[in-house]
Length: 376
Image 1 (cartoon, helix red, strand yellow):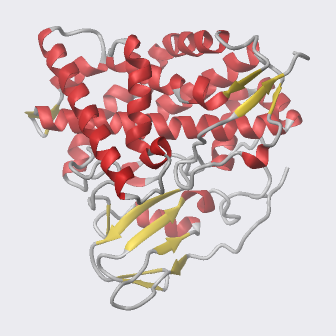
Image 2 (cartoon, rainbow, N blue to C red; image 1 turned 180 degrees about the horizontal axis):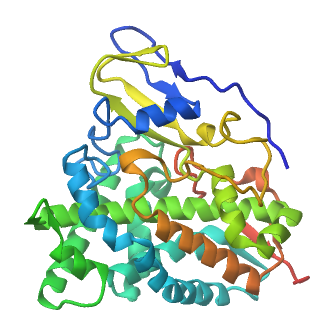
């Protein structure tokens, strides 16, 4: 299975005028790595399109504060901790799948790719599962407000709606934090109350930032991964059989191929030159992870999906200090989804895959009509 290759350039300048420079688009793997491994020059601290009122910790922080936060948070998402959660993740997936496995047609997004990671996050934080519909709608309002109300992305009404949903999310997490402070439990939210950053306990505002980050950076990218992977498998039955035979081995190649988060952005802190391309201080730098994952200088036969690829240093989870905090959790969820889905529903299809409207950066879809074949 192959795809069309494009020219891999280090970077492309988008500069309408010298007074108002446009973004620099970085495509080649080496250049993308240069950007992501150099936070002093390419900063993440320019704010978030998801939370204009607050920064997102740790994703909108630069060293040394970012380093202190990652040191505190990494143990909560370490492989051993995630492995202990796998039975719970499996139960969540199996229960969701069982609820629609006998249907003729479903909306994969509404019935699985959105509620599955949302419910896993709720279990992880110890949030009441009866809040699932509310938290799902809240997440969509924060991450994709334009889709939620049917307006253009930059429409003032959509931005206002996002602000309202963000405030509601902060209020929701504040109530959960206050409750855990009074009634500790065996969950990540309780552990967050005890973390220390540079030897000092995190305050309430900082904990709210972390919870908001887990909501926005944990659910939507995970939904995108499921949307992309299952759209691919629904269209290509032979590939699906290879994945079913060895899902653990195929997982990394699927992530490389679909790259659910197609790009990340940084802001240049100083005038610099990136592999011959001049960049001005304050200029936005867009690192295209999807292009880096198809760079032929890194991947042999980069334009071909090979489920048994042995060496696979893909960048689906980013690179450098901001490499995805929840990468181990994401892998566990995708693997469980592949195993549980195909155990119950080995045959499925999308009637018109070209009509699936994937978002540009975090590649989710609004609707994902999927037929569940009677041939199973």
